[in-house]
Image 1 (cartoon, one colour):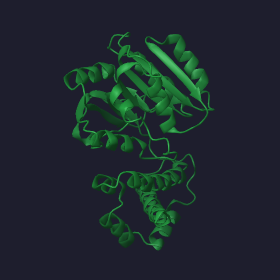
Image 2: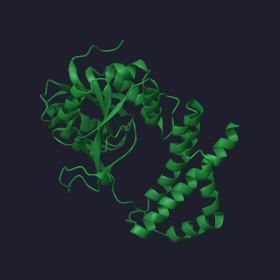
Image 3: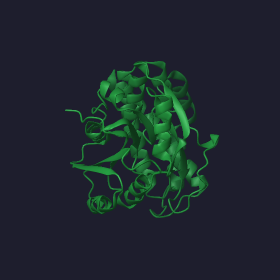
Length: 306
């Protein structure tokens, strides 16, 4: 049974093995200019094994607003989001990730945008940072713009609206696209979106290290598989453009990324220590390898789906 509405807003986040970041994120959620009785936090711990439980217990002791923490066995982000939606009691649910640091007026601005556009999705602003210890001024600019319709780094929606579409699709068990699926269902259901950059947060994006290269490639391959899943659910031009499942992007990859080019890039990154920060040139190579892995896995997954 759904919980009754008791707050103007719910901040909902899921976490998995990010204890060091989570403590800072929760503190920022507590340190809001919005009245402490106007919002709540619903946190889902998706089976973390890195000391997250202790972080949550410390957070409970210093919470300045209602904090609900649920621990579940590792079941994936879509399941965690749905658990959070079920427990939420805000008129509007604000989704963030466990690497997103809200500014002090974050909740207040989401509520203000809700009052002006009560039925809309509200997309907040995000500034990418390499560290939470060295933050730039909280001033959003176009260089930080994202055109995503529904991006859970910083987005809010009426709780009733996301419950009406059934929340997140839990068949998205691998990395990628589960929030885009929600956005498409909301869009096709007639829900409009408002961009409100004053609802601002910092998004932790550290520089790549040697150990991140293989992880990025695995994520890209998983994202390709879920891209095919998304296209099956939503056979629409928006999906084909977003996922690269279209003749132009697929042909460009085949023309420019031969097996020899991939092997040459892999050789350039071989031998890099796991803890070494990649140079800008090495980071570009890593991104090329991830893109290549994405499109190669996309072709395999499309062939398997026929």
